[in-house]
Length: 148
Length: 477
Image (cartoon, rainbow over all chains, first blue to last red; front, side, top):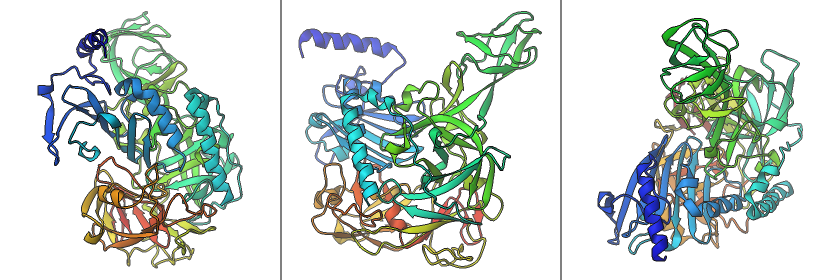
């Protein structure tokens, strides 16, 4: 990332922080201070930092690495959150992966991989649990099962 | 099962098309399965066939009528029987009945001025949209909302009286979006129909008409399903543990699932329970409405079977006796010999898996459930996923059949087997041995359709009672 694009992102996020949308975007830096993040230590001595938010009826948890970049988004609720916003530039990749993986007709689960993403969702109508993470951006010491 | 294989292939082909451009999906049209003659049943027995569209899919036939009519009726089969959802949903192209639209009314307050079309000082303008009808003191009959401002609205007719804090009743057409875990969703209006299950009638109940072309699909609904031929069913009959579809949707939840619509669009709406799509079983007459028993034939071979059938029995503990699974008798509704499992407010219960420590580290899965709409064993166990060969999409593909066991809270260990999902002989329609892993790490164990074969499984609806089971939500088997 060049300096100018980085500056662009910083400017973009300073605008975002003034809006009501508190969420960050997958693969991009979070506007809030990392010191404000909740964190916990994994069994492998990695540090999982996360922030939670609410999209009406959906509870959202975003995981951030040491630079403040969001590498995973998790949710729980009667519907997925607005993934078009939360996944940002990865949303088209997500959409294609979801549709092309739905070949075995299992309506209560989804597990899909694309070049950058791992996608998993489970549950019944009214009570869905889901996660999307960037496969190559998990911080050292953090495994997918640590993203709770 | 050639038909099932064809369906799977059909979806794969459709998926390839979608991969090039997601928008091509919306150019699909709604194509129903023609009625194949499946019986709707007699008295309190609804016959179940397995695999009308895909593997381990329990299928039933339902008759619907325009409310109050005995002639404007149709029978539809290829309907997924789903104990993990609530309410009847039929693709709009599966019938041509002119069913009345469900409407929903909510209230606001505002200030009217005699002779003016403007209502100011609105208590709020959320969930308001042009085209909704509006009534209240000083509002002429047949008035609609013409436009919505920041704190005021404009009416189609001028008010005939002045008043502050006037209660305004706003009515729109009700529509719904239902989300499924595989990323699919069903969108369309809620309509009213008489629904017949076997010989029993649920009179004028809300059902969803699944129609991806209805109004403007809300962004949060994603790309809703278009056609029976790509989903594998004409509709879903949700007979799970709730009477009304979505308790979370009835207060303050503007985008939880229900919408108030007019000719100009749809807006999120907190739908009261009675407005929501309803579980038809809960709306039947006494003796039939406390829940259902799914009584399925067993599948003998690890490698599947065809022609597996069963019955959905309406009502629990209303007639004494215990059924032979899959065989309809006149006295088979009692839970007296079954174990009872209590569901929590989220309709989950605990499952310990694996039941044997020799199969891996044991965990209690608090978000477990029993569900005929899941066509697999499905669970999140990191140890097993590292021990058993997995297919790329998370299905278990052990090189040799693998025996496992799980213990539902309140019961004893249940043994089941998994085979290689990639090499399963999909000429069959029913398998007890298909399973998949998911990694949301939310502590779920899904007792899916494989668990139903060879059992009578009782589903007592939340708040309903039975002689042996007490008060729902509960399962028993």
